Length: 246
Image 1 (cartoon, rainbow, N blue to C red):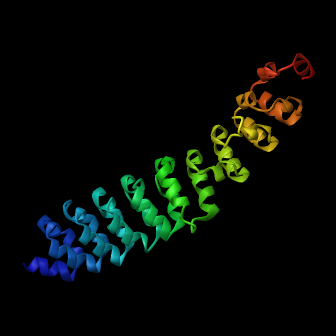
Image 2 (image 1 turned 135 degrees about the horizontal axis):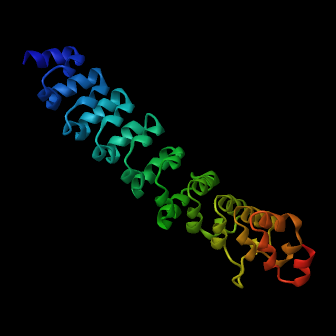
Image 3 (image 1 turned 180 degrees about the vertical axis):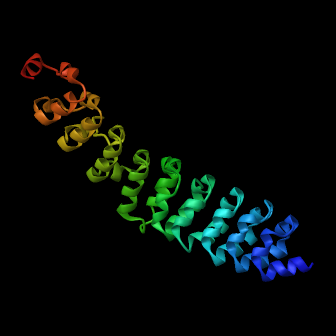
């Protein structure tokens, strides 16, 4: 077909050629080698063709944006773009970004994967603990998980749920993380006696003072932080003297 030959020589001719050429695999392979972004005008079927998409990615990883979602869910294809630039994960499907095995593999290659993976995956205890068992991950990954999704704190091993820095990072995201801190043998939460942690919690939500150690009713900064949000909070003071003091 003379037009097919012309398209191979002059990829721009594809845009004015017969639509059938855009569904011709051989023609599209020849075109994409010259201009990977011509994948955008390939037929729907060809934009679901993993080998064809990979050929485009070899020339320019950003060509992944033109692929159909099923290809952007294909681990091997996305990997080809990812190994060029981690931001290729911006183009990956949600299903891949929540894929247990894929995200573990991608994390081992580049820890910045954390910025892209699905938040729900960080609530999967087996995923989180499998990742933290890798000594290469380090504490920075723990903090990255908390920043991404504070609920990951719920799945952490005990050594992190009793780590003050990790707890503080989680509480700064959401004070309810306090509910998942490691308890003392008597079942009490020792962190409600930590002034700094208490202040962070109360500045988010005045009602957190219901949980704090009673000693803080005498702390001006703590009580003021609650009353600035809800003045009647003082009515919860355990002693009449404390309420009268305020």
